[in-house]
Amino acid sequence: MPQTHHNTQEEIHLGRRVTWVGFWTNVGLSVLKIITGIIGRSSAMIADGIHSASDLITDIVVIAVLGISRRRPDASHSYGHGKIETFASFIISLLLGGVAIGIAIEGVEKIIAVAEGEILPRPGWIALAMGVVSVVAKEWLFRYTRSAARKIGSSAMEANAWHHRSDAYSSIATIVGIAGAMFLGDKWRILDPVAAIFVGILILVMAYRLGRDAVGELVETSLPHDETNRIKEIIAGTPGVISYHNLRTRRNGRQNIIDVHIYLQPSISLVEAHTIATHVERRLRTALAEVSANIHMEPNPKSPDNTSSPK
Image (tube, rainbow, N blue to C red; front, side, top):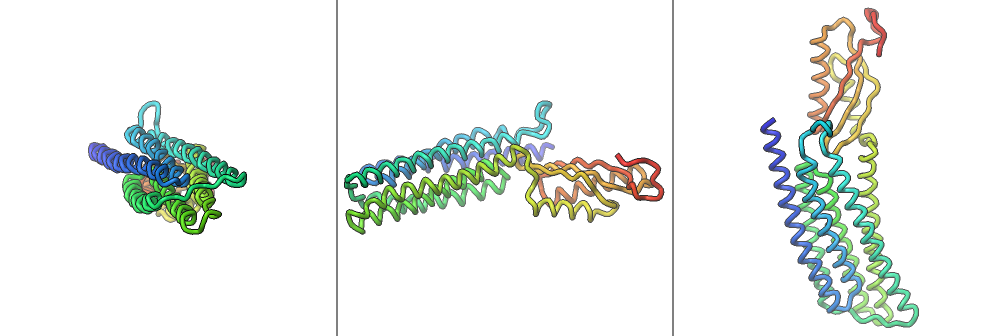
């Protein structure tokens, strides 16, 4: 147990350190994007800056929940606090969705203005250069954060990493829109707000995917099909297990929770039955890492020497 606690503290420290790096990078990027968007007369770059600013909120959410989600189980939370991290992922998806809708609405308003005769200003080089800087920085942040998230098994950090990736995508769209508005003539300046709308759509799709996965875990959806099949193979392939039933799976944060009833020979001793159940649990832990297995042992109802009724 002390070693586990030590590892948990190291994971929290790593997660917070990586997230703080992302936080201060986002502070710099959001300020620079908004300033260069104003100076460079680019609504797409300003929208991109607002997106980067929204990352600050998600960074704070991740920093806040990392320590709480890794607390040990207690009297009120028998399975631990992993759902807090899942809930944080859901909050991040909502924030992303709100930002996406806001960006898209602003883009639509610009297009309507053009349709009514307004001539949009030509974006400047400074906005285009900032777009390139943003793509490089946010792609690096995505890879850096995702690597740490997978190392410590943090769904909130994984969601935050994809938030960084969505910013990189939005910056690419921004670059295309700004370049088109700069080089294709007055009529094509509408590409700048069009790019902003495209950015909003990209972010909204990513928000939906993050939110869908988080809600699935919160309502205790079963583990993915491939993982469930692997679990079935492990249980059925464990020596001493005749068959099984009532297999149920779900996820709590990074922990995979598995409930199953296994049929054993009625003639074996309690010690032997416990040994088989322990072997099943160990094999599951080896295959899936973080596992909480609840294994109920029953006498095989089809065995000739079974004198009791199955439960």
